[in-house]
Image (cartoon, rainbow, N blue to C red; front, side, top):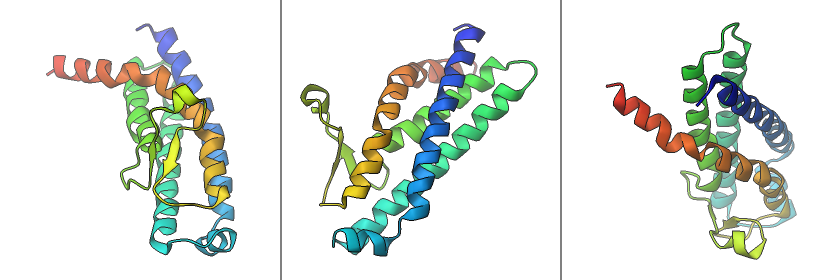
Length: 162
């Protein structure tokens, strides 16, 4: 893949992460467990777990954004560093959104056919939680489609270089 294409993808990812970080940060700065309970009474462990998963996703996105900024700021574009960054963003941000390690929510694979949002919860949650995940979903969908290539290509390159 050419330098221009990789750089363009990295710039797109940077823009996506800037938007996503801003949205998640605003939500996390305004949301507490107590506020969620007032909005809709629910399971304490589950609500706290969701907040923890969102914090984890925010941190991963912030780290990905910082990595994109560093690679793009260099005088000479480093294609290998850019590809590694895109691979990490795919695994640490995109996959974490659709399938968090904590398993607090999951992706409904049929959503593409129904036109509904793909994230489903194991328990009932406040509308604010649904809204924030819905607000960032289209960006995550787009980036997943753009970066799926790095799932296999980057691993193949690493195996070949050994």
